[in-house]
Amino acid sequence: MAALAGGMGIGRFVYTPILPEMVADLDLSQGEAGLIGSANFLGYLAGALAAALRLPGSPRTWLLGGLAASMLTTAAMAVPSAVSALLALRFAGGVASAFVLVFASTLVLGGLAAAGRSGLATVFFAGVGVGITVSAILVGLLGAADADWRTLWWASGLAAALALAAAAILTAGTETHSQDPASGGSGGIGRGLLPLVAAYGLFGFGYVITATFLVAIVRASAALQAAEPLVWTLVGIAAIPSVALWSAVAARIGVRRAYAVAALVQAAGVIASVLWHGVAGAVVAAVLLGGTIMGLTALGLMAARQQAAGNVARALAIMTAAFGVGQIVGPAFAGLMHDRTGSFLMPSLAAGGALVVAAVLTARNG
Image 1 (tube, helix red, strand yellow):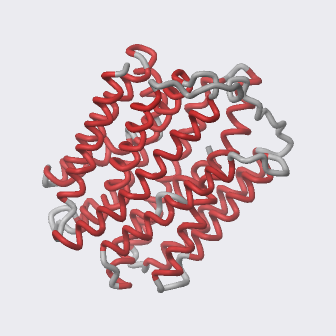
Image 2: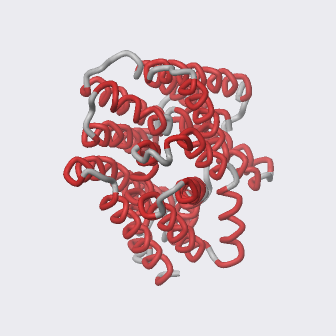
């Protein structure tokens, strides 16, 4: 949980609450802000693909290395002003986040399986929500004290350092349980996987626009500015139990149908962020977004494991690539559309539509 809080909840997502201050102080366009966000997701895709290789050394070593890199790149965001340097740092931070997720999962999920306690995986994945919540509270408190965006990045780097220290202590002496008996094999991925791959890519595109610009959307409305610190905190709080919640739904109605329902719920939140004006709309958007991000991530991979025809590793790699492409395109598209239209209305509606299509694809093939 500490690893995911530092490498994902902070390292990957703290950009969202800090972004409005950066845009104002550096005079960034929303297109440039979107490109910086996309650079992080491009790094995440590159890191996920690299982590899938047979790398020398233990998973714990790579996990702690990824956490250290995430901490350093997070803190270093406080230093430059040039867009090119910010792009490079967020790309490197994305690589680090992917390493944290892959190698933390290798250690924790393998260890839980060996101990016969796989149900505790929901506690592990709650770390993303914990990190988002902690960073949101931290940024909100410092923002209330008139701290500038550079201070916010320094403080976030310090929080990531604490997560690194906790993970280093708690993983000392752990055994490696990395072998997944279902990960090998040969054969195709199954034709039924193709709609799921498309749905997962659409999810990547659909969630990331609101996840990147929600705080900017709130700040742009005079009526909502007072609620700005609350909104991102609610995203984190809602994310904490989300994997457990959607796993329970999947146990009752099936993984694909649960994925379809979660995609529709997220679409409602994405659309609410731009069509439901007022504090209530912002709260609903935050809760529905946070309550589905990790749930959809887990459900998609669960469905892929079920659909794979003898080669789970290949199926999960294809899913990860599709998701990565979607979330790389999303922020850049949204930023450019904002620069042309003056609002996030059109890109958010496009994101909501993508999530509805994802729901249809999975429900029809469930």
